[in-house]
Length: 273
Image 1: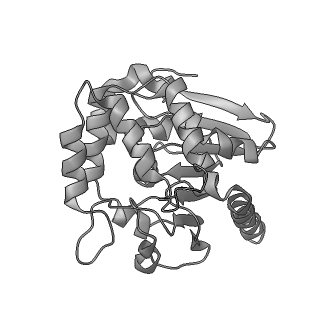
Image 2: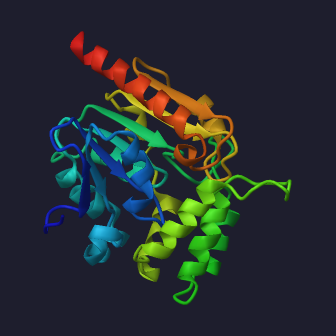
Image 3: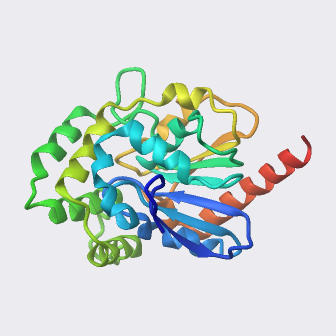
């Protein structure tokens, strides 16, 4: 579904249930989050596509404008929804939480995300060489090839060649073959946004129950971020020790349990206030 003021989305699950908004990251549209949606069939789920992806493909002109995308997202988020954002998608959500048009929300879960992706001596993140490599490898003719490489980078390294290929990698590669590829411009805009956007202040000022999830073997978002995050009431983090960038695929049973336990705490929190 799509209109001029909102981002496109796909609705899934029980329309009478509590709303849950899912926002994807760079390179992959919201169809890659269907395994999460399937974990919560009782919820009214909105699989939201960022500009240039999926149901928002026609809005690709917004992909290079971080603030315009934040505004569109603010108009798309559902009142009193729980929000779950993956990787770069959390940058938009964290900024949208302070936007005047964002409706009241219930909670936020970030999955393998960083409020500032590039690292420095005082902040865990990836090195500038990764940004340089992505910009160098990405050309209009190499979009699909780079996305396949990106999926491999997200997954677990397997040193033992006798072990089977991770099912998470199989799912992502198959989903990539079936989805509409974002344009070169959309992908490059995303790389640029990941290079310069800093929403650490937005995260610090967050007054919403928040759970931040990390993979211990993630090569894109270091789990060491847990030590740089402020603790507060109903603000916590969890590290999946056997996962890289996609714990909902590599440890799905544990992922669902951790998320449901968090939502139980959120409901108790609001019931007591």
